[in-house]
Length: 112
Length: 158
Image (cartoon, rainbow over all chains, first blue to last red; front, side, top):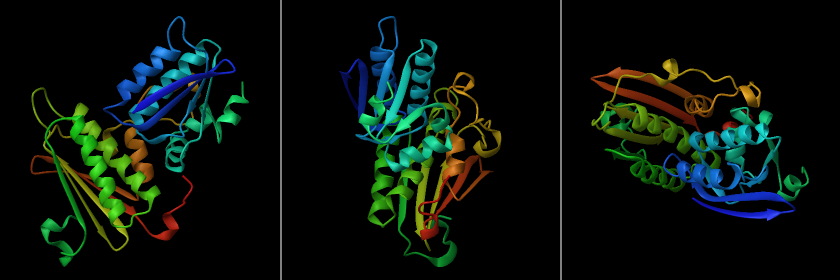
């Protein structure tokens, strides 16, 4: 798992690549914490799933933590560019009801 | 059932077998190998992902919670493909636990602020697999999963 970050129009865009599994989800959590959680953390966040091939429930847990944290500071989280099999498990989990998921990064940035 | 028991006389069925002794790095290796096995035998990508995730969630639980301190779970994962069905067996020597009846069922309709963190893994398995079963046999937990690979199951809406 690699994670790149850039800021576009004041929105932090996090792009994980590869696989987020039980072994790598703690790296993902630490990287997300470093960028978006904490006293100086970003409050407007997009996570671009375009380069992500795999995520299990331990990785989804990190996104739920991030979503709760951002909701608590009146921030916003939008997820985008999910592959079909990843979108399927987000739907099964009901995450599509509590998180905003868009097709493209441009759509995601348009939500801010 | 895995062909080691000689059931069905299908010695030709493609078979996958992987033993894990200790940790999560072995789990990552096993999942990559399982994906390669499925792809090699023509399992469609969406089905392969459903299968890999289901095995991951169950084996993760055994590694994280299934053993007493200083014990190894000795997990063995088998898979076979017979008549458009992907069959999986997961056995371990850990603490007796039936994930399909003892794991709490998450409420996927709760709003964000009320959503508990975690507890989705077994629910995902039950949603993604065609059948799930658990037995405790000869001091082992044995989970049996099947995933139908027939065309009608390819794009089903969950």
